[in-house]
Image (cartoon, rainbow over all chains, first blue to last red; front, side, top):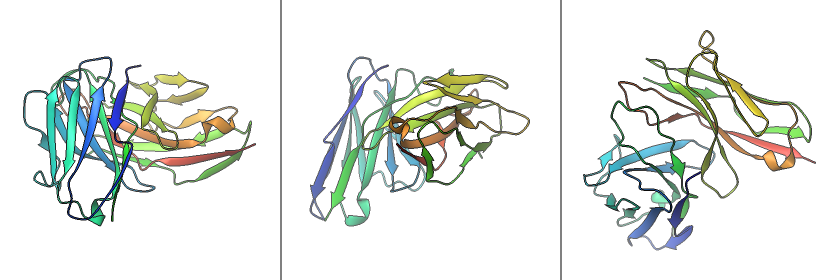
Length: 121
Length: 114
């Protein structure tokens, strides 16, 4: 299957700083990427969807000014957690597909990155 | 709206035991159903899927049958191995006409002892 990487795999930062997480599709063009947040022993919560060339669509309750998403190219999306606080500590996972989201297309398999563990002190 | 309910874990088994992880769903349309697996410290991998009623998805010895009448998609394996220890997520997506972004269950942790 296709490969999606994330960098860094884990990061520890001080409260008030900003952290950038990269998500790359290594062997396919990802026209759509998703960012999820996973709390311990809980399921994945979709944060936002980004189609290449357009602004990200955020899920209800997710602060777009807090979690900045940039789909910079067909192989790279970044999530920046601005002014991070301890409650932002979580496991962040990206995924990518080669189709466009929220259209009447047959399901395209999502390929998930390995995740980034963020700890805010 | 759509939702997925999985049995709570952890499920603890001895090697070579039979595995069942229950999953039921509610959906407004005719969803596709999926099982994902997450090994420790890793992202999710698609394990198997079924796109219509009575379809059976299978992979690596795991199976699940799409049961429309009971709105279920239970995951089974006849003989588990220690390497199967992971968290398993049931999910659905509901095309066409709606977003096909999956709705995930809460996940069920499987621990297999030698």
